[in-house]
Length: 88
Image (cartoon, rainbow, N blue to C red; front, side):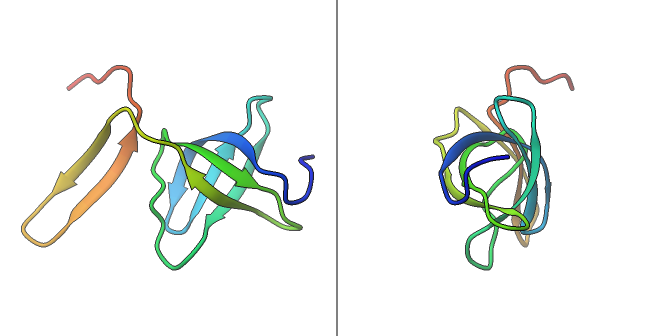
C-alpha cells in the first residue's frame, strides 16, 4: 500500500464523474477522486496522486501529448489523452 499522503505517479485507466481508477507503475489499481467539484482527468492521463484512508486524491495532471474530445452545439466533452494509436 502507498505511503499516506506521499505523491506518486499513476495512469488513469477508467474515469466516472469525479472518480477515476488509477494504476500505479507496480500494477496496483486505486480509486481516486479529483480535488474540487469538477474532474479534469480522462483515461490515459498521467497523474500524481496521494493515498488517503479510503481513496486516493489526484494532486496533479501531467501535461498531455494529445487529447480526444467530442463537441456539439452546447458543450465539449474530453474522453481520452496520450493516445499512441487510433483506428476509426
